[in-house]
Structures are given as C-alpha cells and as structure tokens.
Length: 52
Image (cartoon, rainbow, N blue to C red; front, side, top):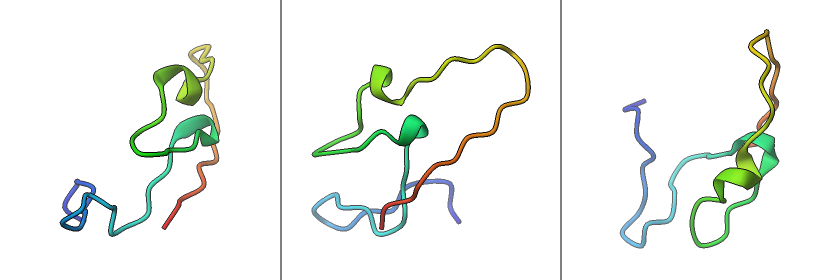
C-alpha cells in the first residue's frame, strides 16, 4: 500500500506483480515489446495475472 514494489534483501518481490500482455519476467522486467499492446484510444479491458 506504499505505491512501490517491496522486495527482500535479494531484490525478490515480497508482493504480487504482473505485466500487461501477460509478459513473463525472468531475472528482471520483460522487454517493452513483450508487454506492449495496441491502443486505439477507446475503452480497453486488460487482464493481468499476478505472480507471488
């Protein structure tokens, strides 16, 4: 609830995280192209799975 991703001493997240386009992270955030999606300026619904 502090607006930041809390991590342990090794940098491993202590709370759920997810990326758009259901891009997967491995040893860091996914690339922009893996997480990007087309947006045409209208209402858009995205489902993002959280990893814990």
